[in-house]
Amino acid sequence: MEHHSVAAPSPERLLGTVSAILEDPDHLLLVADDEGRLVGMCAALFSQSTWSASPVCELQDVVVTSGRRRSDVGRGLLGFAEELARSRGCTRLFLLAEYWNLKAHAFYRSLGLAEKTCLYFERNLSGDLP
Image (cartoon, rainbow, N blue to C red):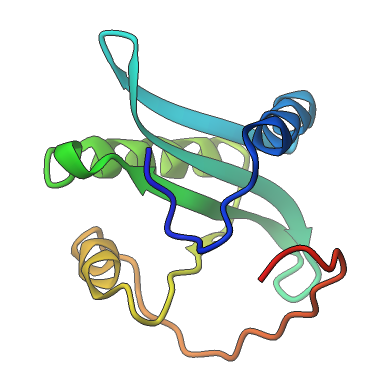
């Protein structure tokens, strides 16, 4: 699967991250496959929001292989993620999309997700990420 980042993590580092996700009960890795071949994935992180005083679900790294976009893989992943969030009592499901990724914006809107405006602030704590 292609990765949009300029500095994609090494396979070893990615494997470590996936292993940590699989061991964390509040973090799920959802995958879509076609006869054993990975065609899509997203991570779902469940947490308690002090702002809404309720459980919420953040979707991270929504990815579908280029050959399977517009084939309901992404729609299926996000639909399943929403079912899981509802089953865990989440009151909100949200995700971030790069400002330049207009196709993703259109896709999320087509699923009924509402665009919210906020500023995202970040500090790189590791020194090795862009």
